Length: 234
Image: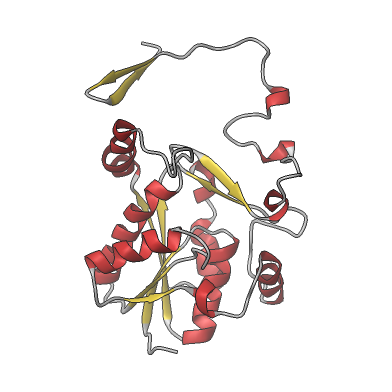
């Protein structure tokens, strides 16, 4: 293992990053600073500080990046009509470079020698995080646990957390996770990995299931100026 004294972790309070926080402490015997970006998660942010400190974070930064997120990332994306591979909305991915940017700023402020993220080894988020890290600070050490530890699944992570009394927001019955911001909410993991299974009704947060929706349509008028949305229904 590399000699790491202080690491800034992109922390959400979810299953992956809760386990990663403790794993960093156990593996590197280093100081871990947790950073959570407020991108509009709402009530999900309330327990983040207490959870991070309980697991062992020396500090926790919760920074309000909502205005910068919308102004510099969401609106330009809307102006470009950007979709991933022509069909997938970029609700989660558009926020990653902003999170990584602020993470590097905190690493400099705190004299940290490493940063870490919870993106899986099979996902594109690791590229979004790490290209931003290296673009802004080429000599930073990057710790990507999913590429180097021996855990292979969410079941492994749940077992790890239960053995160490780590508070996590998922269970074996509901092993999926969510990613929420001002633009959207997405879900992954657990039963959702099987395309034959329908989502549970209690998963819906920003809306309701189609079966529970009103039968009468609602019309929404959005006005744009120079490509940016400026008003809703007048």
